[in-house]
Image (tube, one colour):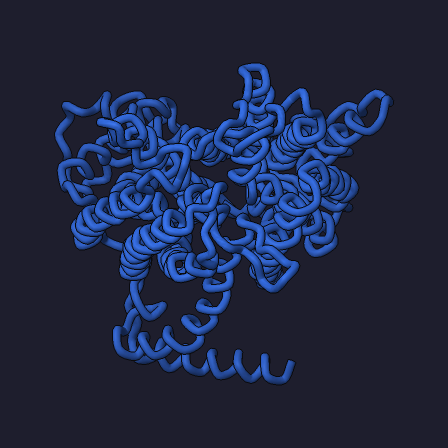
Length: 622
């Protein structure tokens, strides 16, 4: 829910106190009166909202923070293989488990921000946690005592890490995960808070902020997967980790310098609390009979003044009809639950129709959300076994330059960057005229196409791996390398780029459109949970194959020497799971009922064409 500016501009001095606590030894001023005294109100009236005055600090902080965070993880698989001498199974497990924790953490961070600390304070503590983790990673790369000794003879006879060395690494990764848990769910909403969504100027400001945010994100990713990865691979790991650490420190400084320009939104309670209240109330009233919805016995208060959340009516829109009716019982009014002023006296026994419908939005989206996990399992392989393949291939471009293995992810990014304008400008208008669907095709269709591309990517990856291993065995180099160029990995990465363009972007848009406005933090957290689930599934598959395949004198599929293993079988297995997942997705998608309108009429189509022409004309003038 977007708050009005009067609601946003509360307790400015409490946030200033946080800054003084970090940067000054002076005692903090007392916060303003909780009941909103006259002096506090006068201060709030004089204070202007942040708006674009706050954007240089917020966008600067975001850019530096993402450069720092992505700079740490982009080439992490190579760091574990080369510097910690882990085999590919152990390194993959470390990355998958850590990424799982990192991607589940935003759910906790969203709850803490919404219910207790607020976005500013959550980001403040999280950035210091991230800085601690990055400093520890830099120290690990700097001090040889915190890493295994260098290999003396052959790469496959290196000494692995000790338990103390792994413990220090785990602590560093823990600090990074805590930092991500606080920053990810709060960064975009905190920027949106700086604008008044109830005004036309504020809505335009929000749209412009989001455009700048995602543009800077793309630029950051390109810099990370080229410059930073090159420094780590070819210059020094200490400098490669030290540079992101310095950028993180700069991000913190920028964040606090802009303190006087920010608008602060107090925590209003978490949506998770409402969901648990609906479940508890429905369980307590499970034996009650369901009356007709028009009899007026449901608790349906009007929306709060100034709220921009769409009012939801009571429905039975769930795939299983009886489940919808079960949740509806949470809104049934019984004696003693509503006060004389119409307020809710027992929030854990009675919930509003709005809360019930918001909970049902989550319940009906969960089956769709689950289908995205297997699709993303294919995508996460880019950061693990694809890098193991690349390290054994010919990565030279010319006599002097060698492509860093971690930079191959740029191929997928470039595919997405080139495809999206074509899709938006050419395909969407054409498809819109044929399908009469807003956006050219439904979001579920778009997600399904992305799943097909992820399956094709895994099939191609398996076939290329067979060629790579055959070439390596035929040439018999001591280090297991092959003259086969690393660009043979490009087709699978291009297909994966199309999978991301259709499925991942489709998922993000789907969650944001199908959830009510006040559940946007949960909508954004769901995608992180998809990545977390994919990381854990990938880790489970890797460990099962590592422990069950092989035998009778034959190594397992994922043995330490990639040329003796059968990594292509992992790719084919993920492709097979993708086919089954696609069938499941088609089944659940056919029964899904959209919350938002997706079909258009002739008048809307003509208006769309006019707006498109105007937009293209304005861009031509610019």
